[in-house]
Image (cartoon, rainbow, N blue to C red; front, side, top):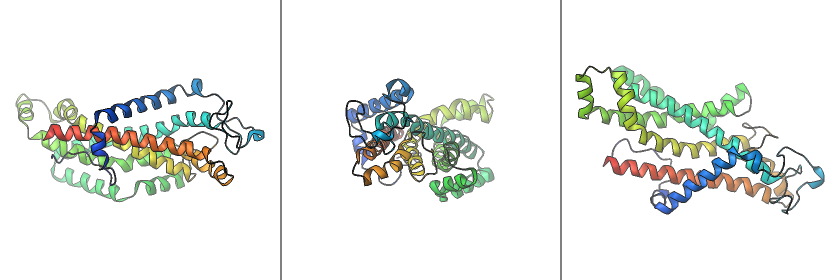
Length: 287
């Protein structure tokens, strides 16, 4: 297997065989499509205003008016779950965008220039890699305050080494191929070859890693929101919804917590399945 194999976190290897099944991969893509449509059309799909408080309906059980019941403040759980898809997907998207751009640039420069440039970039990536992403996000939040932007940027930096190392390995492999020599003979500059030809050829590996990173980032940002360091109530977010629902669980109404927990679990699993499947296809292509 090539050294450019997509990096997976511990505990996801058992999904490789599951992700290889066409039906599960297709189902995962359909679920992801539904999640995206739900996030985009949240104002049209939600039956109630997600921030409307009705203390008279506190912890109301599921019914026709509130299919998933209400939380401790009487807010509709289904509406908050639907609107929460926006922030819960937007944050990981930002993490993937930041880490993909930084990782691709650093990986290409490191592979193409080599020498002391490669050494400096590699040691810098090792330093970031050794620093836990959640801890980095907490430090940034402690300085800038809670919200969505600061943790997203911090997690984007923390995820950059995963992408940069992968792109570097793949780019080094591409440099050994005859077409690179041919372009150099024709007078193409190094940056032009790297951007126009090497980057498109390593993009499948980059896509597979970014898909895996999306699921991991969603889970990490949900944890931050649960701890009160991410999206702040009353803005709906799956992580903060789980934190809010603790009171409902203690009051004997666990459905308010079960819904956002299930949403996070399903989303992380389907992104992992899709990412693992893409990674396996890339690995088979490189054999």
